[in-house]
Amino acid sequence: MSPPLSPLRILTQATRERVEAIMGTPCDGYLCEAPAAAILTRRLTSAAVVTVHIQCGNCGKSRSGALKRADFPYWQDFTPWSDELAERHREKIKADHADSRATFDQDRENRAAEAARRRADYSRWLLTSPDWQTLRDRVLRRAIFICEACLGARANDVHHVTYELGRLPPAWELRAVCRRCHERLHDWTGGEE
Image (cartoon, helix red, strand yellow):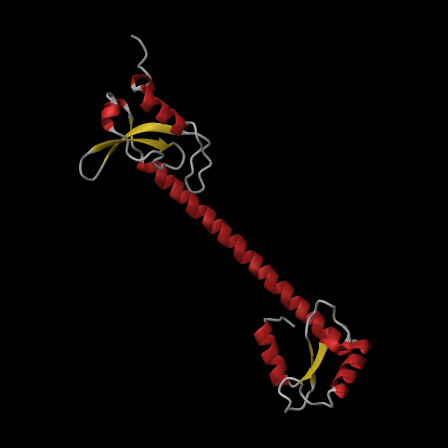
């Protein structure tokens, strides 16, 4: 008994070239790593019509859309369409998304912990640095202890316009402000300190 003919041998030249081109290219399915794994399948649609597809052997996606059944005289010999491939791939995607979410959540927790640590270090530094105390007093005296934001309340805080120049920037990068304006400035700028 001779081996069965390859499904591609029985196609017209144009159909064979189209099928070979599709089967020879990598799948573009979402998170599909299949370089060129594809199989000719027959698929029973909901309207009880059989269609021919090139199905990715990894993610289960139809790589071709429905092909003309008339171009495939022995379509009955094709492998049945596998919904199982797509289901397995969906489960893989769900697991991958769950892993990504867990990594994202852990990174966010690590960043929050690092920001809290930096704020605590900064608060300690503000209370203990003699250089900061001297600069702070000079900025408050320069403003005559009047808030430079609202020009009405008593200034008792010093606000960094930017932290790009470090904790002890030039005095023109510091502003004397009241507590309410200081909190408002940090809410508006999104600053951490």
